[in-house]
Structures are given as C-alpha cells and as structure tokens.
Image (cartoon, rainbow, N blue to C red):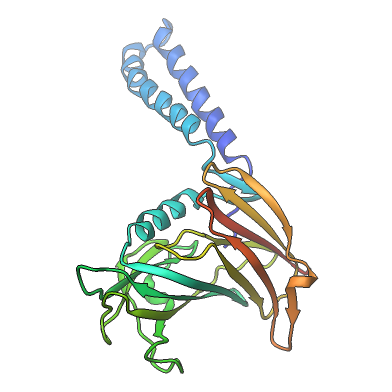
Length: 288
C-alpha cells in the first residue's frame, strides 16, 4: 500500500522543467555552437512542451497529496473513478452500508455490504457496478473477489464471482442479479469481499475510504479496521476535500478500539457523506 515516491516530487519536476526551458532558450540565441540550426529546430519543438509541462503543474499542483511522508499520487485517479462510475448509476437507492477492512500479514481484505432498493421504473436491473481498488497492478484473477446475495443466501454459502469490466489498478466489476433480477422497489442486500495480496507495509501505511456512493438515503456510515497479526500503535484520521485540502481529525482512541483474542479493531462511527469531501484516510503505525 505504501507509495513513497518522494516527498518533494512536484518540486523536483518544477526545477527540471525550468532548467529544460532555460537551456532551450539559450540554445536558440547562442551563436557559438556548431550545431546551431539543428539545436534551434529541436529547441523550438521542446519549448512549447516545457511550457505545457509547467502550465500543467500550475493547474494540477494539488494532485500529489503528501500526508506524514506518504505520497498519495493515485487520489485524483481514484476519485474520478468512483465519481464517474457510481454517481452515474441511477437505478439504486442505497439505504445503508458497512465497511470492514482486515489486515493479515501482507494481505488486505475489504468487506463491504450494501442494502437498498431498485428505483428503476423503466427496466429490470441485472447488474450492480462495483469498484475494486488497490495500489498495485495485479490482475483480477489474482484477487480473491466474490459477492454474496444476502437476500437469497443469508448463510453465505454461495460465492458469486463478479464480472470484470475494466482491468487496471482500479478494477470495475459487475455483480449480476440473475436470481432473480431486480424490479422497481425491490429490496437488495449484498456483501462484496476481496483480498488484495502483498500490499501492507511493515511499518507505516494507510487505508483510503471514499464517501462517494450511488444515490443514497443516509448521511453517515461506519468504518472498521481489523488487525490480526501486527498490532498498530495508533490510527490517525484525515479528511481530504474535493479542493484537495487536508484536515487532521484526530486518532481513533481507546474509546473506539476493542480487543479480542483474534484481532484488534478500530471503529470510526462518524464517517460523513458530505458533497465537499473526497476521501477519508486512516494512517496506522505498526509496533517496532
């Protein structure tokens, strides 16, 4: 999960772009170089590119979000994935969700439940779109991903493999309602599980939660983090707005932490569904 690509990534790119621009301008006006004409042609081509890079950095300076030395370069990409895919889905009214994240060794497991009803008046719905997200480019076949239909399979005996629609770091999948398909005002309740291998750091790491859903009838939900093997010293909570401003919201303290023989868990019961919020980020430190 940890993507430490350099705390000063943007500054380095700024400096390199600046020096390339200066170098190209000097080459154009230089009278001492034997390859002056060739350099002029090359420089004339390169100068617009350098200006484009600098302009791009000006208008995208907030994309590289850095929190506690962790460079979160994929935030912008994931935000647009969730927003475009889920908010265009108008066939469902989600009435409750629950998020559980489990950490076992180097593997990360997401368990999400969605409960709601179909609000499509025009057609029977057979597909429920989902985003399976991680931070390493493994194939969908390497991810243990399945869905339970809790309406028809409350004991969770029938694992259903979702259909892959888009492959990449962020994978778009469809769960197929074929038993039976959904009609107007029909209730559904599904549980989506997937395990992403080899993505948990041994020291400091993070989990990213997006409060962007389909059409919804609620304004808060719970997030639970379960640690089985390695026990974290603390879990810190940050929020990132759509304007990419970062706010620290404190630690999940002992009042929200419960222990049993298998795992330690941290629960956040105050995850809001405001339109100006892009992400919640939970950073955890493991014991030395």
